[in-house]
Image 1 (tube, rainbow, N blue to C red):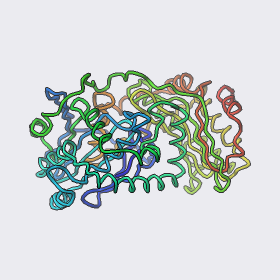
Image 2: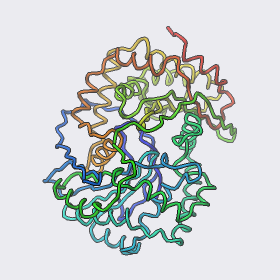
Image 3: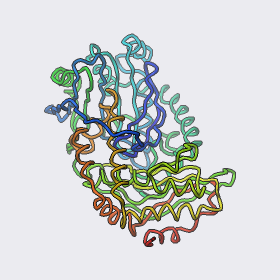
Image 4: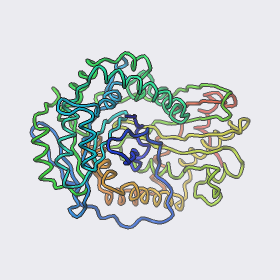
Length: 484
């Protein structure tokens, strides 16, 4: 089982293949509100219903009785951020063991049961959440919920399985270390939130993977897999009342935390964003990979959607696309015209109480790195002073279209419901989001940029042939320049 990064926009969902019975998802690609070629139609979703049991366990559904399939899953308000330096990697390790057998089923029995249902079982870990879900025919919803309950409450955590998965996770870590984007963004978190839980990786350091024992897993479950930190979500061919009954039956005995969690409430301590940098120069790589970020906004922030619109204005570009001169992004046109980069992508990643807003640059034009960074940051500061209505409207159209595209299917809808409930306490319907995004003006974007971008400290993560990257203070100075 593999970890997934926090999606960089609310509309970007963790990716999971559905090609075999019990799946091991790859680490999700960083995703964005993708450009669209047409404006979205008006969205008319079914109602999202929620119920909370007496023990604090929440059930949420979006029912479509005519649909023959359904996705049901449990979203847990705990991921790598709930760990310490000593047990960092435990949440992901635990996810690996979820399908290795329970007190009621061996691994083979579990796989055979899912296979015979024609269903799919999946899981992923992020910095703030752990998710276990199943997609099946609507007649098998009850069985799916019972299996999820068994996995979450009765995993055997055999010593032999722990040792086998230890090797699997170490190999996974080796593969992740070959993915430069993953490496750069892990280092970006580490420097921006240094010495804090949000700065740790999801897989954890190698020494922790080698040291984690069964008791560490048991302790993590006891502390974090509590009723008040879980949401059972159903989407598609599900009945809310029936799912509530199933929750009572299978999760009604779960205990709440000593101090019960209220979804959407403020965490005890908001992370401090640290203006800083980390550079790993390795001239064996022919390219420079550079991520630059300011402190972003949380899921609940009033400027959340404005941040996404600002992100879309900066845009994304890849020289392999071949149509850069016709993209709406001014930075894309400039970079394409002057041959400054291989690609770039803007991002706005949010957490429950903070975020990162920035850009990821890749270039093999090693003598022009300073120009690339300079002109990218020039676009950032321009957002605080002069934004055209046309580029704001383009960005809004892309964002709304991306929303509709991302909610294609019961699994995507379940993901949207689960993530919103555990992070904000309620679900904004796509219709609500469409109205909020539609109301954003150029003035709103400039106000956001003036507050969150102009003259703000930055975090920098760079890897590869980065000798040509100017020193931190020189780059930081670009955050206060006025450009014509």
